[in-house]
Length: 159
Image (cartoon, rainbow, N blue to C red; front, side, top):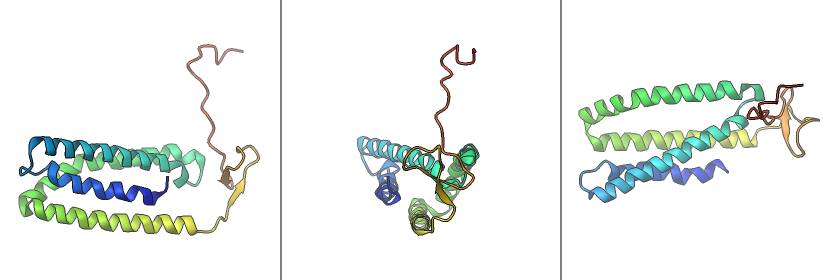
């Protein structure tokens, strides 16, 4: 899935937040919009985790990258609500929504620019591994990801 195909989801989420958090809409509309926000959020987070193997330089670093991603997400979950609450109390919902659009738009532009730079960069250091599946290329010194052994079989360690 191309990064640019996620942009409409990234735009839909803050737009759906407006009726989700507005008292001017009927409860059914607000509930539906809130459900849409959660659905889109789940899809975007899944896309970020799916992109991790392609974003690391060595297959051995996937676990570390996933850990860092989880930790940063946890900090966001911890700090986001109080920061947004303080911003709403100080400036109101309109200012917070405008700020979210500005920072979200800036983040989207930077993300797309970085993805384009990465996609158009040179393929230095990328080669075909002898044990990689056909058509899979890995960076020098890296190994392709392999399927984990089936640990559900109680006899898998027996000789």
